[in-house]
Image (cartoon, rainbow, N blue to C red):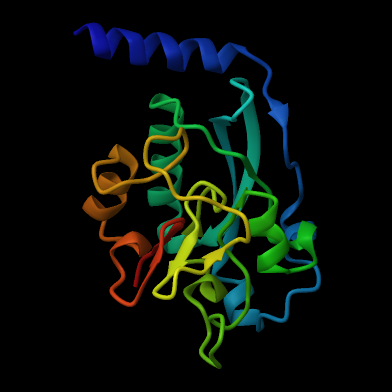
Length: 196
């Protein structure tokens, strides 16, 4: 009962606070310059999301996702806000010239990006808006040889904004049929979630 009341008070207080705006693009601005074909563009949309950032303040950002997973992503961000799980920022990746590396280095959480999987010729699930990356600097890719991406990031599950198998956000993604990159076999993509 006490937890429910606290969650309700958090939700009410957050609804009256003016958030810091991290992104306020139109859909057209968010997809400008994408090489995605029209059928992919027609299948995605932009969501406005709220979260507490690492400064402890309420922020508002945007994430571009496939329409068929937008309810999942909206619900996950509501849980992120309720849990006060800190998120660096959410800005459509067009802001970074469609560079996944630049977005990750800036600890940006994003989804749609029409691109191939690093080191392959295969299109990434991000190309169709059905993959989400959250806090790449707290949840880096860790390769079998120990290399980490983004460069200089450290994976420490005791640090705020970091996922583990016990994280309520990871559990909610999985409950909704998403796959967490932290369970990949040959490497760990700790910031990555995708859904077929």
